[in-house]
Figure 1 (spheres, rainbow, N blue to C red):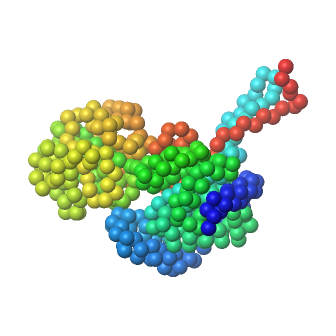
Figure 2: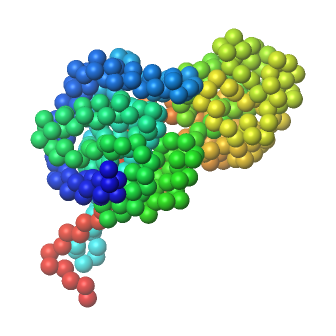
Figure 3: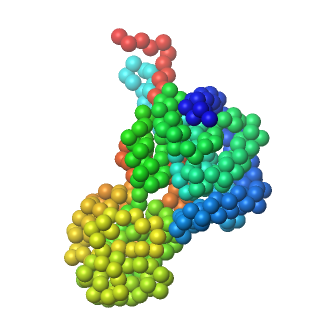
Length: 418
């Protein structure tokens, strides 16, 4: 296989599809999405069979429980994908939305509207649901996409891509608007990263090694979706029952996700009453605790946290715990070790909540809520192409609006520049 030629041809087809898709009406795009949702439900049995091939290979390769969970398709998760497609369908079409218009003294008008970015290359690992979420968001926002999924989900991704392409074909839209790279060879990724004549944006979702390689080799702008070293700070005077439920949910709801809590910070003023009970709850749930000296006094069975632990995204039932003197020390810890993804404060103090929200520099800062809520579907965006930890163009869950770019229009009546 000539990978370079393959990727160039895919880029050419995607550019042509993007031009055709830019003129598609909201009704046509929504019709395609409705067919996709129907096809997902109708293909449930086939999708689970294909997914089982990936799960069997993953077990043989020694993938851990968290990664296998991310890889697994169940009837409920397939239904969630279909619902996400329908929620995207129900959202307003951002393409052509006028965000501002004004009139100049000479009478001509200037407007700013939303336009598709064009062709988006999406590189991701482990999660087959990304195939559907990304394709649906790109289609609705008028973008063509080229999808490269990792080898661990190759059968699932191929089956899901085929379902999506069948949907858009039946709706009469250009089928090449969604293309899945037919090889898991990373040379295809390197070739994709240099297609700057055809691809406008790269969005990676994966481990640090993959994203580092992409940043070093891409000649196309990249929006990073880095790891989630997410913190929950339990403040002095917090409602401790609320804090227990939030922290348990943040760690245990799905430990293998980027918005799961990896470090729990506890104000020294309430550590004595809070830590023994919650750490025992975590122990009962099979969570390994890696703590500071004060944490280990409350739970002698806990391991000692190392410097490396504070900055680690475990994606597993492992939790770092540190007792801090006050909110200043908590925010200093977050600034030093966090990944600017999601950080939470549990507090009854309005002043502390306001200050935490203002001073913690993350894509999402939450008050009295689980970090697991940081998600495009939960936020009402329909789905997300990922959670951007960058600051330019998009930050946080990337939904429909984040997949458009401003375009100026000028409306005149023969106006000339003097």
